Length: 116
Length: 113
Image (cartoon, rainbow over all chains, first blue to last red; front, side):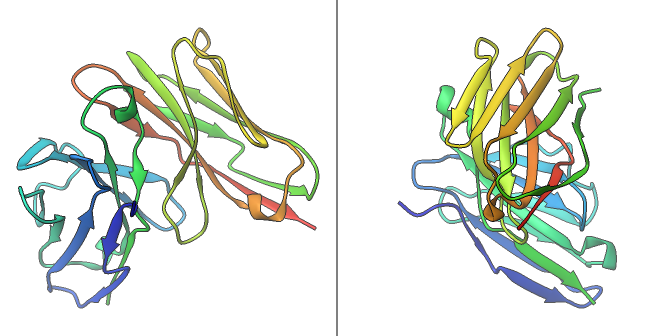
């Protein structure tokens, strides 16, 4: 049973380009969370999605950032017109649909975005 | 405002020694508290999870405690090993709607030979 998969693991973009980060949740998981971790800092919640729905995007900047979790395929975190301050590790986590087991979030290995 | 504070920020201990990491939170209404281990360059991995009614949970050499009255948790590591060197993150979830989580900034533990 594969864990949460993220790709790419490393992404380099020039200022002004777009970055697309992908997350495939664990099999059977329908909840996806995205977090950002700046160097030497803790993880910060960005957005929580269920299939085809954004449940909570209160941690995501209003501009340039968007997220989706389509019916088919991985969840995508999209950053348009990247700036140096977007350089960070972006982690995705997934959890099962409901019940106590939904407390547990399983994290992917992260995508390290570097903006030059 | 929901907050999770961890102490110490960093800690260096000798291999084989025990240590205790602290977590204080103000998250309300409380649902559950988790401790994660994050190795450098990797995603966090769950160590323990405790709900309101649980006050201790063990996972090998890791033992977590929870005092829901004082809103404190600790993670005790016994007989530390070099591989325990990592950041340990306390995560507290609020109930209601969905599991909205608040992360602590972590304790960076270094185990030296």
